Length: 438
Ligand code: AMP
Ligand code: GLY
Image 1: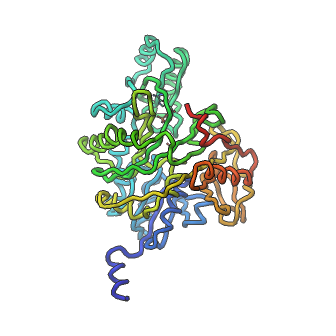
Image 2: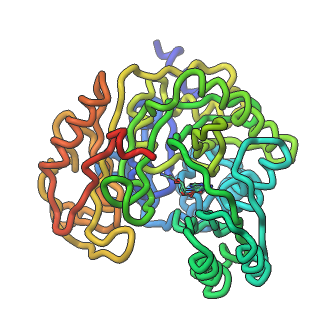
Image 3: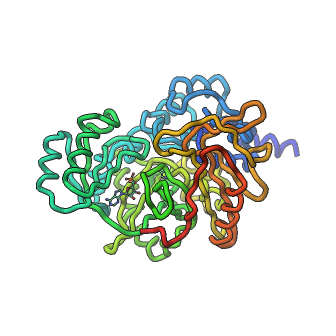
């Protein structure tokens, strides 16, 4: 027995894992990692009130690379999951790898697939991956000249760099287009992220999020999902980070999945390999199912939020085993299994989100672990103070349920959402309702 234990310690042993980030996505990752028996300690930096019930939160900002390296070194952390886009785009994985710390997440060069829309659009064009027709501009004057001659509206204008999901504008006429160019390139609303812009054709069709594990050579798509990006019911109001999700996405048939695999997923990882920046981690494909076939609307270099909240509860294979397989380039040897059935996540948000909102309100209706019976409550923007969970963000909680049918998952999630309350709270009542899909 003792020999077996020593052997186990030698091949794998107990490990300490750090999850970088502090939102609902990170809470879902932490909860999934908790199921692994080899992990004896999970840290989250910075984490949040709810994550604190499942991991030890460390007050280091997610993008603080020196701070993270110091913590990891001083605390003998064995593995780091870098979840948010900012630290990935800044090169946190590169910095950890220099120190010999295994991580989950792409390096800086590969993270450009999300960090620069110009990079990703040019990649798709070069390798024939279906996407909207586009032009790139690094001068406001040239961009304005272009929209003055363009007669086709709506038109989509995107800031090149990261903009917290707010850098995409669908403009309905020339005056809106000119105003948007000024906002991004002249007023610099998104700082340097707006030094270049992409102007692309407007496409329509149902949207599907497909996240995939990839070690750079092998790609294994996860169960599909559907986000609801607009703030209000009926897909109205401003774009948000996501107001709710369902998985699997009912539009994503086996036939469409096979097309995507052949025309989008494999060509993308092969393109990254050929460009000398193999992508390792979770690659997020934001797809639109147009009349002409599936196209890429965007790539993200990370797990989606709130997609992760509905995907990981359906993952039957151990998440840490998969992550290690990605890190060590042996994804092809892993069999990834998913539960049948569906999951639904309803985001409870602060009044005013995605614009300005107030924080610090007490959240009523949660148990001592920040959760509820038969339901998983992923915390996005909370803190825990004097025995009470308080709101700290725009998106506050992701109330999530899994069931054998989508209907039942939605019923369970909505029933639970109705028993939680904080001042100013609002949520969409039509998550998973197909009539709200374009
Ligand atoms: P992105 O951040 O690039 O995913 O864009 C945010 C949202 O804007 C997407 O989920 C789509 O709903 C919409 N969008 C982006 N690009 C286009 C496009 N070319 N045509 C129509 N809608 C788009
Ligand atoms: N839910 C969209 C994203 O994570 O970018």
